[in-house]
Every structure is written in structure tokens, then in C-alpha cells.
Image (tube, rainbow, N blue to C red; front, side, top):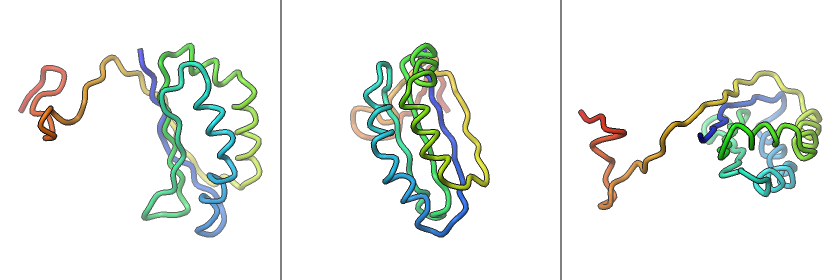
Length: 118
């Protein structure tokens, strides 16, 4: 079962703070991406609110995510983020029982998803 980790973090500072955090976190992002079971791992500055950082991760399984939490790169990443003043966050774990593409073969949004249609 695929696992998605998604949410946001807000840090004190000016509009450049999140960009600085992400650029400085590059080695941590790359280390996570290299871990077994990592499908996707990304941090991004919100384009309309530069003080807000979005996080997105996709893991092949619960075991892969739990191993990520136990591996040194995760502790290193937390140390990096700890250099900044976190003022709020909301990050959740989602389980995914199925995966389908958004668009059909012709490039249009699907009219049916997991057997459900309008």
C-alpha cells in the first residue's frame, strides 16, 4: 500500500526564509529520495505565500516510511529545520489503496475514477 505524507510548515522570518530552508535542505531531500521505497520527496515554497513551505512525500509502503524515520538522514533533516523558528505546521500521513492517472490517453481529465463516474 502506498503512503503519502503531505502538509505545510510555517517559519518565522522574511519572505526569503522558506527558500533558504529549502536550498539548504537540498542534501537532506536528495538523501531521502535515495532511500529504499521513496517514490517522491519534495519541499516547495507556496507561490502566493512565501512564508509557507509545502511538503510532499510518497513511499512504497508503511515499512519504507518507518525506516525513513529511523534513518540518519531524517535526524539530519530535523536538525536542519531546527535551525529555524517553526511557528506552525500541519503534516498528515495518508494511505493509498489504488493509483490511477488523472488524464486519459487523449490528455483529458478522466470521466471515471476507481469505477465512480458523474
